[in-house]
Amino acid sequence: MTLLGMIRHGRTAWNGEGRMTGRADIPLTDQGRAALAGCRPPGALDGASWHVSPLLRARQTAAIISGGAVDIEIEARLIEMDFGAYEGHTLEELRADPDAGMAANEARGLDFLPPGGESPRMVQSRLAPFLAELGRTGGRHIAVTHKSVIRAIFAAAHDWDMMGRPPVKLGWDRAHLFAVDAQGAVTPVEMNVPLLPNKGGNP
Image 1: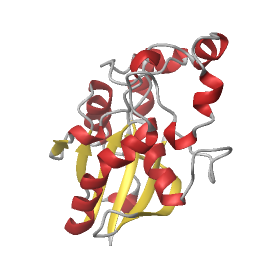
Image 2: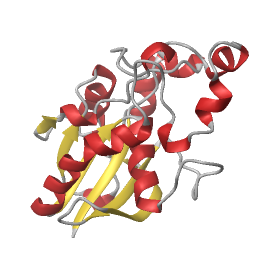
Image 3: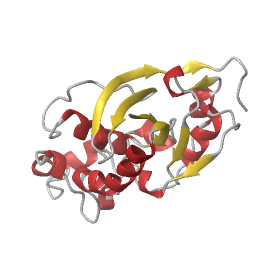
């Protein structure tokens, strides 16, 4: 079995403001870096191979929680969902705009599609070859990535159409563990696994 642990990047300024952050390459805030300092992935992921979104916030997170002591592979397919015309806006702004059509779009679940962007279903399709590669490789793997990417894999693992409440409420400062088979199908192992203190410290 391949074990995949997914970890979201730390906090950015736009996260703190509730802005949709897709491809905008925004760094971690000082507070975001401080919150990650001294943390490492859970023990179930010891010895894992690291795969990291190319965006700066994910690369910074991986550098901190890995302690800088492991080889990290930049994986383009782990980049955040493309929010198109919604990029930089808050949900409140978009819901208040009668021309945005947010109610109808949000009601599409997996097929929610920002103008000029990606849907969660498109993200699942983008990730499918990557997951199949991991499934054939076996072993343990860590993906440092983004909220919408983790939600897309979570939805596939739980057969959730992204309508209504999720099967499990995800904590975004924790790791989420999935099993991946040789065809790239994912099943849940354990959600919301706390990061551990790194007694050796981090840079």
